[in-house]
Image (tube, rainbow, N blue to C red):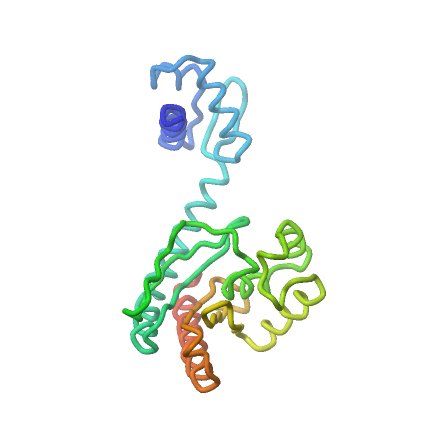
Length: 247
């Protein structure tokens, strides 16, 4: 498997390096010391995935649109984290609990940055992407700004046990997402913790979720108000910073 990945990456890197000039399968095979059949198989996979484009049979292949999208994502995340990390660090220190920035790509939620300000708790990101869009506050905060039909498609692929209690059927979910958009935040008690999420918007468009989780013992009315006030203020500050970056 590693050899296949290595060969695929070499083919892709060679095509990207040559772009905007096209590269033929024969040229790739000669350059990388691979068989034409191996190169053709790899090109087929890359083409179907959108990583490359075929100009013609004679001219060959160039870099495709997916690479441009990935580049834009990386550029966006760089600006988001440059502005967001200091805020997250400050909030985590202030409330002495866990604060994070997350974003959904495809069917998975990715924690882009997390800071734990509570030494009594051990919080860490176990996996790069998690399938918990309806089981987390930040996942639901992002779903609130997605088209309803897109949300339904994702939701119907989730077992009810993987959804928070107030999102266990389609009608309840639609009401919940509408409430999140109206109120500008979401918080609930989940097992042994309280969870929070506030959307970060630029020109009314969702760009990320700012989240927090605290022990259930601290999930009191007074502390909930404090955490929400801090998160909402930070989200507004982050939105302004991103607007200035013209994201």
